[in-house]
Length: 336
Image (cartoon, rainbow, N blue to C red; front, side, top):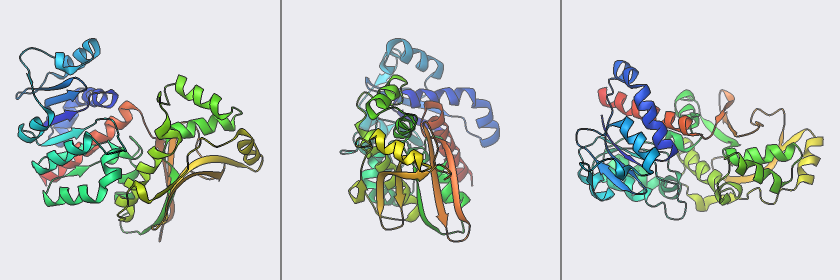
């Protein structure tokens, strides 16, 4: 299976490590012999029709910080041109999320689809902004479009809803979809104020230098849009979501709710019509009242009642495992 890898940060490098460590199992169990024929990062893109040496690729990235230093015999070309013309079956799009216009990920995905290539992405931006049109384009070009890692990272939230709840009707869902804010609120539950909790999250690497996307609720909004469209067949974008982040949550509020047996959590909810992201009290006995960087979501179903799934919402290896899962799904469809 010939792959184009766009984005070689923590997740991209973790994926390559998984491809190396699982190479025997991938071939013996699924007939997958992955060959990365192109790889791009902030410095540019490198290509090799015979397949890049993955160990060397990791070494170059670690020592020289960009894959373009891979070697003098490797071609360096424009990314869009490579997507269009490189002989490959699947494009794996891992560039950073941009919720303003979805670029450059959106152009990468659209170009791949139009050139007949399957697409796997964990980039939330394009899907949060243009989910309906991207799904239509994938269907029109008869390619596989997989994005299980966009919601929940390595925790298969979307796959759980679509596969494990088949035959039932999902009426609504709600949960914690952002690990950074959940960590901050958990620390506030333990007695810290917002600034202290945010500083702690930053020092531990859970919060970005600019934590706006997380603490103002935009990341949770993007994930809610993706989940509502896929699970509830809605046609929503980020503009359809009522949003409130955690910036205004006071320690006194948290302590008051704690005395009442509750914890304040940033909850994303969908009832089939309304999409809301806002902090609200949750009983500590509720399954979705998890601590730290965990994500949790409860689906309310017509026949089976409430079903909850809990797991880590981020992490390089965790998210890379979702990409591997999507890759196996694509291979399974091709073989059948």
